[in-house]
Image (tube, rainbow, N blue to C red; front, side, top):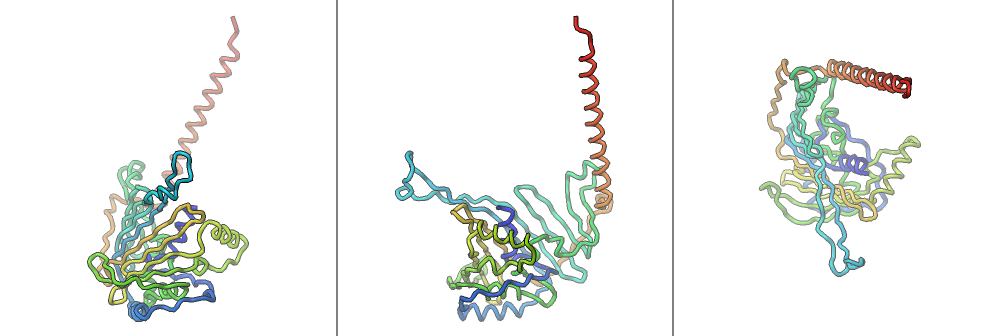
Length: 324
């Protein structure tokens, strides 16, 4: 469930989407909300922005609200609910430029496991400290023919993509607003010292899903409808320039089993991005690393096989030993 919700949240959020083509949403539902005048004005400014680079950050967490029960049970109406437990899953931060050539540098942490990566043109360098123990101290893995969207992962295809394709800007985020069933203006707010206008939207999950063209896709869509509430809760924080400096998406699990919260920030756009390749002495090509891993796996398998043969031989020798 967490895996599916994670994908949905990434698809729904305004995370970084350089070089990615936003999937076409499904047909709008019959009951669409009219955007407030302030949002309409800021949306036009947002669509006029065509950033070529940005600095960004994003996080994904799970929130669960456990119920507090009495010694006999059934006293929720007296004691209420405990405060939500927020469990961080993923954090991501970095900067990206569409180029040409495209460049990106970012760090990520998934369940406490940290990693970093750099993209220069179509070459991706991933820092994996554990790999250095296999190949003599080279912690960087070099993988060629990698696009910017592939480097940033599944979140790069989100309909709220920030950088997007050259000339595309934030058109995908505008489509998200167009599919909202309800929109409320929550008044002014502040994000990292920047005054913003805050809006709350309810967007159907079905509007973000691609049309199911296969039986497998239709089964997956039915499972998702059973797992999650039909509406996403989205908050947009728009600066005076129209820049969506923060987007928060909440995916609610059915039967009160918790929420998945994705927050993405755009801290700056049209900034210089300079990414340097790691030293060649600290880099190993992905193909070479795969060969090392295969050889190591074969050695371990052969070692286990020889150990098993020795155990069988010992057991057979004991069985043949004459009894006194």
